[in-house]
Image 1 (cartoon, rainbow, N blue to C red):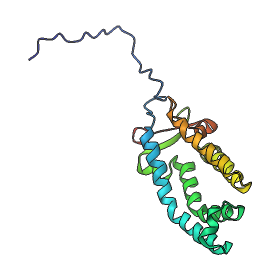
Image 2: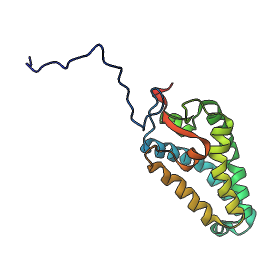
Image 3: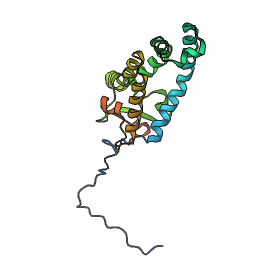
Length: 183
């Protein structure tokens, strides 16, 4: 037994609150950078079969074989977009209804609005996803792939902000939280 005094509890003290700015309203806890990276990585791995199909289709349509894929062209961009559309439709549906892509679901994270409410199609898909991917797609169609790639790089770097919100989170008014705390 320890002879250390017990901390005093003042029944008349005002209630204390955790004012850590990294936490959202209520019990929401921001997803770690590692969980966000892992979710994006898993989503990328799920997309790989669609990318490979796109490469095969683009190589055969262009007539230049695999060498034709080394040049970003509007035709290749449209082919890759079309080949990935079935997976993207599934991911968009999951985000609009559950706030999760497959990768986020597997890592128990989810997208919510900044106030903690559930995302909808506009905030979760149109603003958060289409704004960033749309810019990259337009850049590729205009043979400005470096601009689109740079924007994607800057978007990803925003996760190192104190609130861990990326550029697409800021555009959409969203954040990524741990789903196991929020149901």
